[in-house]
Image 1 (cartoon, helix red, strand yellow):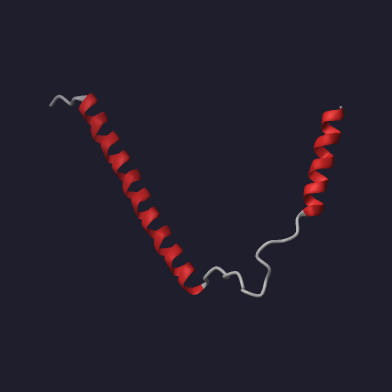
Image 2: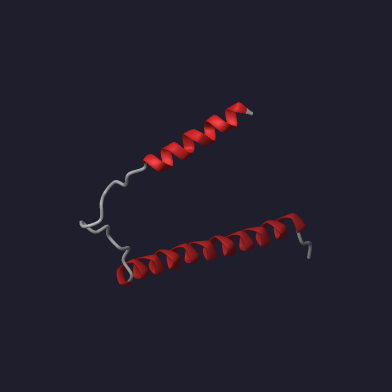
Length: 74
């Protein structure tokens, strides 16, 4: 009885790659199910209508402008 080692190698490679592929498919499906459950029971908070939509960013813009000017001076 003669065994072809290359054929046996391809069998084991196919079995291993198939197992990994099946595991990844199951993992992705379970993560999608978990994500759906989490979003159903713990939804993300929606921004309220009472909070201002835009902040006054004049101080931040001034600080960035001063930092850029200081950096360009050397």
